[in-house]
Structures are given as C-alpha cells and as structure tokens.
Length: 252
Image (cartoon, rainbow, N blue to C red; front, side, top):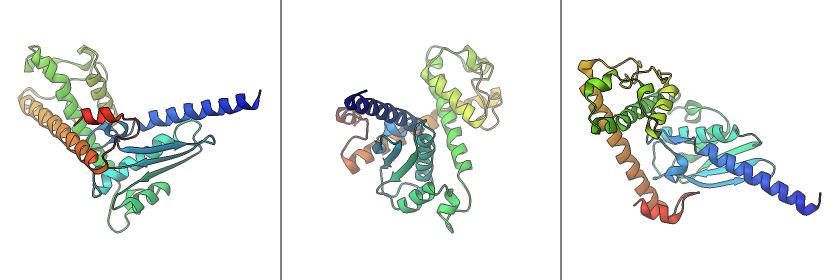
C-alpha cells in the first residue's frame, strides 16, 4: 500500500469515528426539554483524532443554567462518547457557565454530582432524572393521544387501548422508549393511558385529569424548548455544530 493509500485509509477511519461520535451525542438529551443536544444546538465543537482521542465542547442558553441539569448533560455526553468503539480518551468541556470548572472537573474525575459540588449538593441526580422522564412520558402520551382524539376516539376507547393496537409513529416509539427507561411497561400489551409512576392502567375516573396533565406537560416542555432555543441564538448568534445557519433562522 502506498503512503497516500495509508493516509486515505486513516482519514476514512477518522471520519467514520467522528460520525459515530456524533451519533452517540445524538442520544444525549437535555433532561428538562427531552430533546437531543445535537438538535438543540448545544454542541459547539467536536474534534476526533486519528488516535481515537475525542474532545467535545458544549454550550447552554445562559451562564446560569441550572448546574444539576448541566452536570447531567456533560456526564451523559461523556458516557455516550466513551462507549463508542474506537474511542480511547474522552474530554467533554462545558463552556461559558458559572459552574463549568466544578462540572468539567467532576465529570473528568468520574466523581459524581455530590462530590463535584462538595458542601453544596447532598445527593446524586437519579431522582431528578426520573422526575423528568415521567414528564416526558406524560408529554409523549399527549402526543400519541391527540391524533386519536382528533380522529374521533372517545376517552373510553383510549382507556381500553394498548400500545400494540396503535399505528406505528415516531411519537409512539418515543413514548415506549421513555417508559422503558423508567422501567414501566412498554410492550404491545401495555396500556396507552398509564400512571407515569407505577405503570398501571389509569382508572376511568382519573382519565380526564391524566389527559389534562399530559397536555399541559407537553405544552410546557415545548414552550421551554422554544425559549431555550431563542436564548441560545441570542447569546451566540450562531448555529450549533451540525446545524445549518438557514435552519437556525427558520427556527426563529
């Protein structure tokens, strides 16, 4: 093999690894907004070397974004990238945040949230993550139920439906994934209307309140997402990595 051929092979492998890293970052979500960091424009920079060394820079809408949310995103990004085959070292850097030093250092040391904020935090973030997943389940329930109600389905029919009886859709796949992450029933026989804590089928008398909560939760998450996108654009006046400028303008 010629030197040029060898260089081309290495370049191809590096490009493939960079694509795999980007795909892994796409699995990391803002816990509050339930959207991938890559879609939100939170990834400012990603560099992958031929030796498998990866450096990712994240940015957030404001300097004072909640440190617990920020820590989850940085830690999840670190775990996702580190799990990619071919990655030998990972560094995730949160930029322009009041707690970036504590977060970056804690994640790099695999210290956990409480140790990273010693004297300020008293526990890890498992409960917070579960709370946001439950909200995502509620919002997802509304996303799945709205088209059914618009098509004429009654509340009683929704109560009787199982996930396996519903037509395939991105919203349904997302709902099933969020339920599975919480350890709730997500198979074909699982009820459409399920308690986000226990996974049990919602009682008929509780269905009106359940559907209202689902709708208000979905609206709240979507509103917060819109606000965060706008604040991020105002703060940096640029698209995130992988986002075309025209896409950014169209989102305004």
